[in-house]
Image (cartoon, rainbow, N blue to C red; front, side):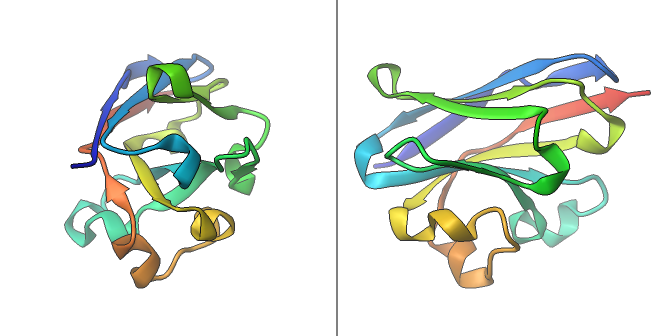
Length: 136
């Protein structure tokens, strides 16, 4: 049984930093691509399908980022600890949202930060999310 558990969210002022963590179990990191999605405020009723992929990392270490976060977000993973990270620097109010950790087939790696289709969303394992709130 695959489980993803996020932590590290919180309320911070603009310009600050956070490191989100996602502890995984039930999967072999070398067989999956991992990603962080963000669900913006006001879209909660639409559900996770309304979230945007912000960063992805493949099993070979390749990374992809949404244009809006390039240079400020860094995705990484520690396979020995079964943990995925998202370092967020220079936080902006528009970074506010629920951040979800996901795991999916490696073939999806290039699709995760470019408006994934509904079928892509359905192919992913999801955590419960961790809230990030950035005040100006």
